Image (cartoon, rainbow, N blue to C red; front, side):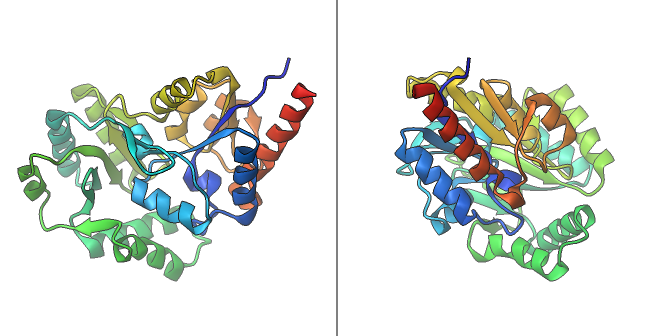
Length: 295
């Protein structure tokens, strides 16, 4: 028996967004159509709210946002409805491990995203993305990496230690990047051994480190419960490891065609790629299915 879908959670990078980091017209229209038919749509992303909201506003899409993998959840009006900062001691341990392994990282906080070296950051990200996707234009990649600073989404600081002096600072996530996968694996092993933090990734070249309560699946479950809905009637669409906690919670997990093989195996159901408006395709299938169930 097919169940009505009453809530859809959608990942951003590699899912809702195409390779140009934009929401296509088809995806935007499908989301609005779903909302008009009473379906709760929520974006679930590893991005900070300011980064997510910038892209959503460009496409004129309004919806709640699970940001930083569940560390902070915002309602449709931009009000914080839940937050889960990292434990301060575990945050320090994380920094020590990453520094020891010489792994570049950024810090996501309640006061913004911080990077220690703008030029190095841009060069590092460009190198990682060009290595992973050599078909992309180098100039475009560098421009995209620079844009996060140009828009004010990421702030350059001289020393991360200076941030520790701010008693009101809450750290939500440490995002580590490296093109050397063995270093990331070693960091993950050490973090697992020495902390109780949640460690996921949105790609082979990064680690997303946060409180064990800051997971997309946990945040989505709380959102669904608050709306008095059921996870059985909820769908999650994604492409990477930081979406797994959602997939394990919902009754209808969907992987993108561009998702990793392991992700496709977890979900079972695979839709079109992010370049083929896979989100729109899936939503329209849901709307047709819902119509059949209620007819």
